Image (cartoon, rainbow, N blue to C red; front, side, top):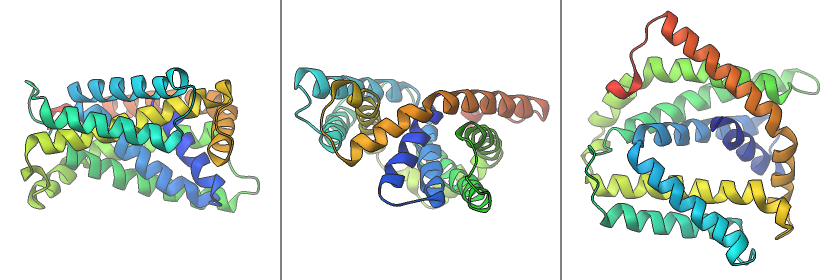
Length: 238
């Protein structure tokens, strides 16, 4: 359910700028990476999304929409980065997150490319429901089956040798910025703030959101069934 609005929002933002079928590639890659960060960071992801949500709602309501989409996301990212850099967390360090992020980015890009190629060959393209069903199910299986290798690669590239609080600051900044931007995209049309291309993407998101969520839920259920059937290891084990 988290993957669907994030993916569709990214697709619509890219389409407003002239991307067509190929908007699926960066959207799937970014959605995969952000999802990997969200589930990989666990404890700090909750705090980061809370900061982003509060900033997003405050920008829309308390400030009467005086902050736009970009400004809200940047403000949330800066605040979350400061918290991540200054506040020590008792849970284990999130050094494993870079490898999982790399896994989500690469598998998302691969599946997004397949969707873009298939969509370009079909007149009128595929329904959003079918796109999310395929994307979530295939990407989920590919991610779980390859994440261990990507984590090992990130260790060889010394991505996990950075200070723990620096990694956590970057993770929190990313998630808080996404959360604040998501609040704007979902709630912007309801408050009639800031017309322009951001609003076009937000309106398009609302049109496709219901069937996207249904497709993602069924795709996630299918991926989970396959992972259990073939006894893949749990991702949190590494």
